[in-house]
Image (tube, rainbow, N blue to C red; front, side):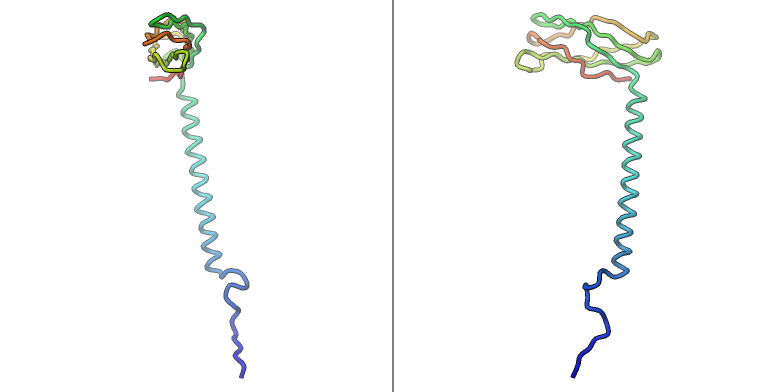
Length: 133
């Protein structure tokens, strides 16, 4: 008595057509999500670069017991309004002062000496960034 079967052993010769279709669907969904994420990152990067109309640089600074005088150079579009954030730290890298300095007007370059009040003598003057309003 022989018990021959006409079907192939399960799992021996690869997956069935239904399982391969499921894999294709997952690949398509993954590709669509990857493209959408790339477009989203590109959109935010473009708007960050285009909308950032103000940039600045600390030229020099002088510190005293309770303040830091900072020579700040700001470059901006003629119609841009915004602010630059500056901070100062002590010798042990504790933040002793932070402030926003606002700029507007039709000038494209502004050289200004600003005073940052501190809680202790500051040994640094660091520009954290400039942002348009």
